Image (cartoon, rainbow, N blue to C red; front, side, top):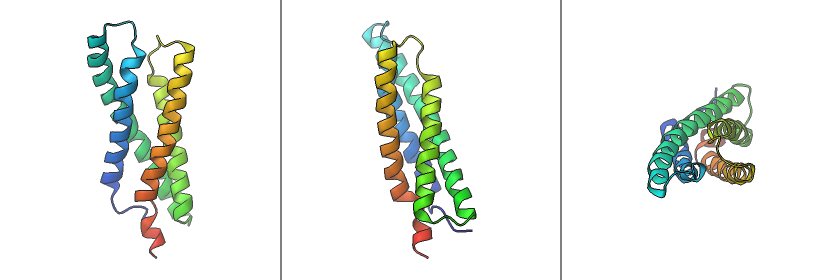
Length: 138
């Protein structure tokens, strides 16, 4: 089996950090009925923790997908694409279920669209940096 990444800990940590930062920004936006200080505290800390969990889950799922693709003989580019697609799908699905239910439909649309752009962009950068490098050096 080809090695998918030489730094899985860094990859999972970076994925969690990106998602935690997104959660920290999105969290206060979702609870607009509270005073500003409560929104920043509860929304920010809650979003940070939930985002870190979602990021870790999405990164591990993407990494497992890349490993499965490596087992069947898919090269580095395919592994990176699998990582981005599966990780983004898991992250966006988890974010959809973790969103505050008091958000209005236009807010939900813009928040999810923004998260999709950030998720795919960050996933692509992480995949380019960490996934499939050992396969290319063969």
